[in-house]
Length: 208
Image 1 (cartoon, helix red, strand yellow):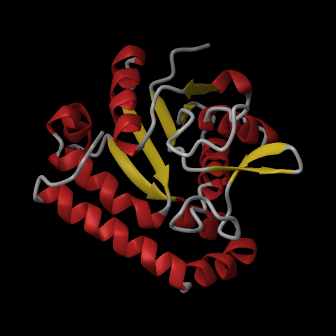
Image 2 (image 1 turned 90 degrees about the horizontal axis):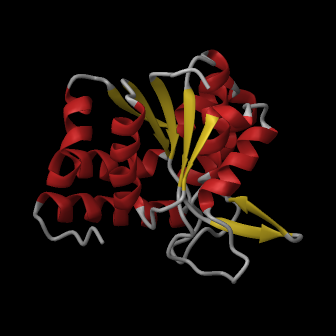
């Protein structure tokens, strides 16, 4: 593989098993005890950005997570990689990160991969509701100083999957996303995320 310097990072979320097949979740699925995650949108969004610029790699992030559904549960990164391949992203352009168990650990592992691969430009994709907590972690967690330095000089950017999907395919996604963000479950999730941001800033957050 050529030594690419740019990378798209797809942060992991939840998994569900439908008809014997593991997959990421959409807004209509229940991703965890707080309701829909919509993390499958991150995969589709990453495929759009990759096709715009194939001179980059994709890092699929996520271990088996905190939700143990069964002994056959794969890593989140494994499923993200499969789904990216199904969207015509070449397998050899995807790196799997399978050690992390939560968002904080994903960022720690990403920092290691950036150093190991000599990456220079990073685009992290997650859901819109999730990005404020990501940004707070990067800015306030001392262990993420490497990401903080990149963020400060715009070498690391955070992009919401929802906005990418609406940009590239508004007819398919605008109504779905608007409905999801107007739902009571999403409003609850956003409130929880806001509380997480406050806890990070006041050093009350439990990262591990």
